[in-house]
Length: 170
Image 1 (cartoon, rainbow, N blue to C red):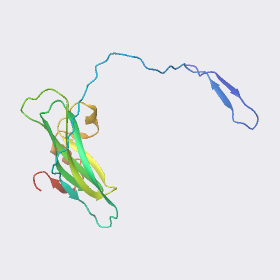
Image 2: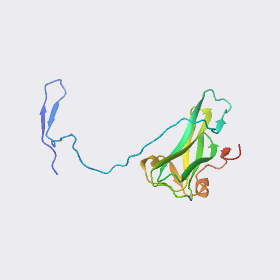
Image 3: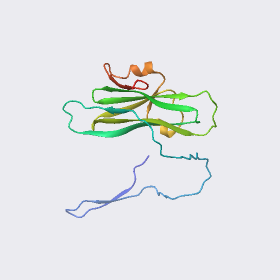
Image 4: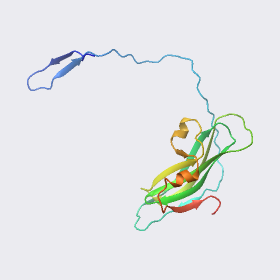
């Protein structure tokens, strides 16, 4: 490999100007036939009950209410994603969801499933989202950590983490 040719033009008291001979680069667009997934999303407003967690530590001046959601793209509508637990350790809140596949057959069409919890907590609280289950293919599913079992996750959560919420106990 050889370094590019460089011409230097310098006037006294001035920074040099460089003319570097490099590869010609063309940028543009072209038409090409490719197969792309098409996802149709229908949204409708519904009145639902969401878990609500109010965290008010001593000495915390600023709190904010936010909705913490977790979603996954799944191969068909036979899947369910539910927040199973919320735990806290130090300044980190762990939102733990379970992804399960139902037994009924469903049309093979990519569907998004999700769940959410409303949290009123210090604004600097870190939120970690973890899904228990097998990671389905898809870009949306890369943003969360997936673990195979709750036992595997227990080793990652700090000892003494406080259970704030468990589905079915509120």
